[in-house]
Image (cartoon, rainbow, N blue to C red; front, side):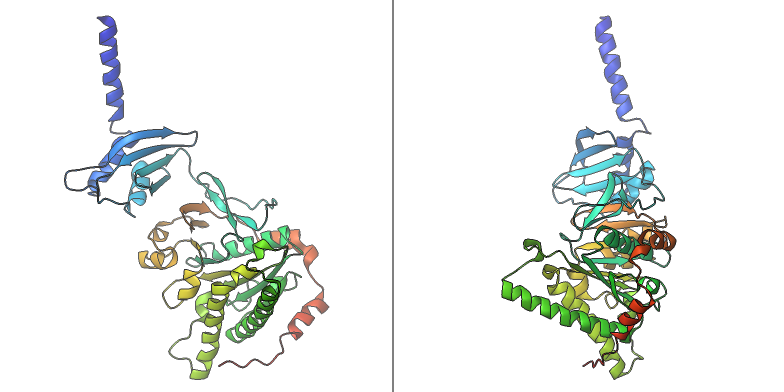
Length: 378
């Protein structure tokens, strides 16, 4: 009798714990109800719980016709006051993490394999981006939220890891203020700081690209990954919205802007297989400032904080970027969505670590002299 009473009491205790007001599963259930995440009278039903060292995951059967809701993750994170990852694979998974992403981390200058780089730290550790698997990337975010720091992180890691094989072209539409000082580095082939200079830079890249295409055809190469070619060519565009023509531009002026956008479209459309990697960055993405071909051919999308849900959907095809609150925090989206904190690296640190690659004044003057070709657009 005592054992039976003890067993009943134990079951009652377990049942009570399962539905205590402060338990995660109870709060998740309440969130489903408040969001009306159900079909008629049928709610998602918990079928199993997965316990790991760094998280606990709840797996639900959902009624037919019910799919994942983009608001669900945001609501659950606020409800549980913890980091949450929601995904759907026929079952609904709610992963609740025991710890949060740090608010600031420093770049550690560690070497990485191949053309990978540490794009940021997420809930499950460092997230690596592989430019050989995903060659093109778009980056969006409001001013002073981390875009330029990310671009400098990419620049620093590429040069540190591949000093002899990385060549980098930069379009710095902040007048060259951010990346002009790096033009003396031997890996930096050219820095354009105006639309006219960008047009010259893209004409040079397209001419080089066609020469490389001819070589690929002659050697019957279809993808640089299947060759012994080591060189990769990166095109970094900061403040790409400045390459969008406006109504007040003259017909001749618009030709240069249109040429730049067409060049970017061609690079992202056909050049990835030949070793070109494009990184297009804009402060406020719209259908006009983020060219359609560039977005469609960039399978990696990163967004820092944006002012509106509409901007978030343009940047990463879903809401969420408007909810980011921490500087340097971003949503990194490839085939899956991850929240990351981008490592911070300063200009002073880059110059100290990579100063040995700085060319003397003569080398810089030679780079500038190579720009004096006359370019005609249209």
